[in-house]
Amino acid sequence: MKVLQKALRPGAKVGIIDRNGNGADHGLNHEVVVKEMEQAGYKLVGTYDFTKADGQDYFLIFQVR
Image (cartoon, rainbow, N blue to C red; front, side, top):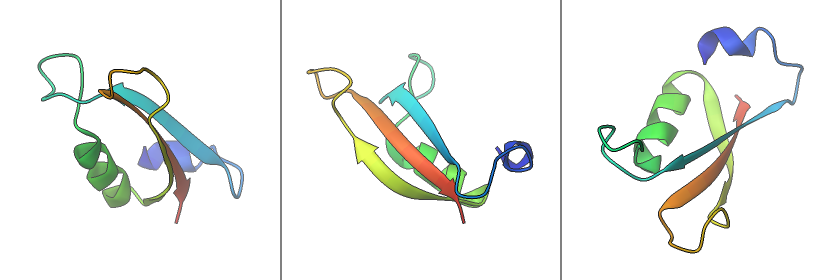
């Protein structure tokens, strides 16, 4: 994600849609994604859970700090 920053326009946003899980079951808990994105220089600017009704999926929006 650090390399991606060079290709982004100022103010650009990056969206990540995934499923809560432990990494072995085709998903990663959203807390892990937020932490890793912060370490890569992004800040969380939006969180949505409208992707599915089961509450397991999430949609996170990040912006370069």
